[in-house]
Image (cartoon, rainbow, N blue to C red):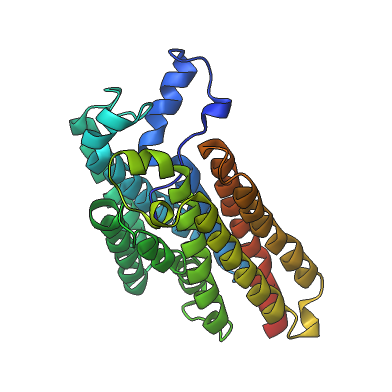
Length: 300
C-alpha cells in the first residue's frame, strides 16, 4: 500500500501563498496515491457489476484507510523530516502532532467502519491492508525490503473491489494477483528512487539506495515489462476480449513508458524519477481497469 509520492515542486505555487500552504497541509494524507487507490477499487467494483453505491462505499473505505496510513507515515517520519527534508506539514509545523493523530484516528475509524458495513470478509481484507501499511510506515520503510509491503498490498486492491461487489473471485485472479504483486514491487522501487539521495544522506538503505539509480530503475523497467506481458497474454486468451484487449495493450504501454523515462533520467536527479513514478502509478491504474474489463469479457 505504501507511503505515496510527494507533491511535485514543479507545479507548486509561490512559497508562502495560501494555496501553497493548503497543498502542504494536504500532503499529510498523501492524496495522490490514496485517491488513486480508491478510484481503482471503485472502478473494479463497477466492472464486476457492483452497484454505484457499493462501488462508492468500497472506494471511500480504501481512501479512508490510505489517508490513515499516509498520516501515520508522516507522524513516524517527523523527527527525521525536520532535519533532512522540507515542505512536510508536521516537520514544517503547519500541522501539530496532536492534530495529525486526530486526523489519523478519524480516517482509520471511517475506513474500517465502511469496510464493516460492506461485510465481515471485507473488514478482514481491509484490516490486512491496514496492517501491511502500518508495517511499511513503522518497520519496513527505509530498509532494503521496503518494497515488500507495497508489493503485498497492491494485489489487495482488485481483490477488495471485486470481492466486495460480487462475493467471489473469478479464476482470472490466479494470474492477476501475481502480476499485481510485480506491479506493486515496481511502484515501490520507483517511489523509493525518488528519495534516493535524501534517504542515502540520512543513512537509510532502501533497495533503490542499495542498487543505485541506474540499476534500480532498470529493475523497475523489467518488472513493468513482465506485468505488461502477463496482462496482454491473459487478455488475448479469448477472442471475446474484443476491444478491451486493445485497451489493455495501450494501457500496459503507459507504465512501461514511465519506467523507461525513469531509466533514461536515472542520474538527472529526483524530478525525472518522480515524473516516471507518477506516470507508472496512473498507467497501472488504467491498466487494472482495462485488464479487468478484458478478463470479464472473456469470462462472459
